[in-house]
Amino acid sequence: DTAVSQTPKYLVTQMGNDKSIKCEQNLGHDTMYWYKQDSKKFLKIMFSYNNKELIINETVPNRFSPKSPDKAHLNLHINSLELGDSAVYFCASSRLPEGYETQYFGPGTRLLVL
Amino acid sequence: GQNIDQPTEMTATEGAIVQINCTYQTSGFNGLFWYQQHAGEAPTFLSYNVLDGLEEKGRFSSFLSRSKGYSYLLLKELQMKDSASYLCAVSDSNYQLIWGAGTKLIIKP
Image (cartoon, rainbow over all chains, first blue to last red):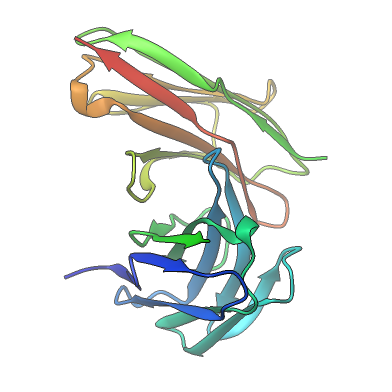
């Protein structure tokens, strides 16, 4: 009965590689998000999709490309990984895109770039 | 610019009361959230305030003063399991969430 799930939970890879992280929510929500949490624990929004449409696209290198095949899934592809990409990436969802809606977070993907 | 300020770390004793403050300066205001994040886990929702005053939910209460740009989270009867980071987040005029850096709360026996 997992609400928001992400795979993989851990990802260790070499600089320059390309990797993908998958996210799925079974809450029937319209809106999904990708966040990056760095070593200082600061949670930073990267992207937000509402009903498969991109609505928030913060200043993120274009090596990061989100894809939403349907409103229950939001994947994140990262090209040419760099050391600074090492962080925890959280997927989240909310019923609607409005900021007063509670966001439900996935367990996180711990990415380590060597 | 938009800014959320919280203390970086606080320490309290099991069974005691602790108040975690959050001040904010944002372009517009559509509510303030508190989330709890245990080490190595995802943030989970604790409370949402949009009107001034105190909202109580069991051992946890959250207060908001919009005129002062200020909120606090009050935790009573502290338990060891309350050791976690507490994140303050504000919904701005565009209904986007602006997140604080979080307050790490350490509970000692």
